[in-house]
Length: 311
Length: 260
Image (cartoon, each protein chain N blue to C red):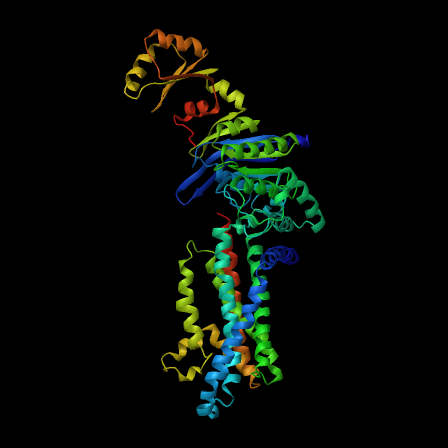
């Protein structure tokens, strides 16, 4: 069953920087064609894991195999088959859009005519064809990100690694990037991404692991994680700051599966939000705003770590 | 294995050449202008005074004395220029080194690619210098052509150790120190403008330790046709040892910086 052999296989993977343990013994597998996510707050160990997979950071301990090879001994061979979108842009801003792809294609030893052909296709794909001859420097953040994605595809990689692909982008630019990544996924490209945006993870990932403090605290599909760790609906209540603490005590009388009192909101985890809201009103409480919504990965994360993911 | 390393380093060399395509005109203009200014002001202008008083002591015209010294100094300046800010910028500002490290290139390939580019720039600048010097009539012997590879080697004796150090830097303030307290004193006191024997006797051994002095003395001996095999081997050995030590240090420094 060669098809079932994992593209990436990690057992007890550890990365330490001096006395600081960034990745603390994690296990995961990745199979061909799936979109796999590492979800967690800043400092959870996501980027360190990505750098180990990218063969630019030797693991301190544990087992790691990528495309059936050893990342330390066969880094060059593995990297030839990876595409990498790093967290910070690494474009040569003094060169043009096209030159950036040319230089990168040469790194992979591709012939000039192959690079030219792929450059045209990739710039079309990321909607930058009209900027091909322009210098990179003045491009917007979203355009640079899309160019980085195009660059990462120049070698037709087996696995595409994306480290926080939309961090720092405005919502419109972010949606454009998501749309392109979703198309890649539809085309069967294997994606590995890290994110601290729950909506990004929910939209793009077939399967994800939730990381916190260098450890994996849960894993599964977004839907199964929500089903396992949260309720179908959430009632969000916002009270006048002066009444917040008192309301938090009173609202405890409403039957819920779980209750989270945040600094600015109270979250009630229930099967039916409207029924819970009626019960809140029945107690004589008057929230300034109330919102019934479906559970998200944010709620899963809150449940698992007691903290919010944050932006 | 060596062939593979060579071809991977060549990929990084092509990156630098693509980069250089934007700036080559200005760069060549200053490579021509600088020797014209120095040779006319110091070689001809100041040289008239020097020759009137000390031609017997130097044995040749001041212009002929100065030109090979400036050739070696040009190599040093080229090397320091190419191996400080461009290297630092690639790892810190633009992060193009990190981009290359995510490709099949290994840190050593990225390093060697830049050393190849430096070598090319040294050959260019030293060749331009010699052509200008020849037009000034500062080169009189045929053996002077041998000063060209020696000047390039002098440049590499600076290039590889400086590059190994520059890639480890986290701030660019260190480079101003190299210019002020390294390059300029060497330029002035390593025999380029006057023989080191004119220095106070306690300072002379310091001058002998500088790579520039070895480059200046050998370039000058070759240019004036008075080099001997024995001294040539000594100078070349010293310069080559520094260049090789820089390669070894750079292989390690690049790996430690790019593989964290």
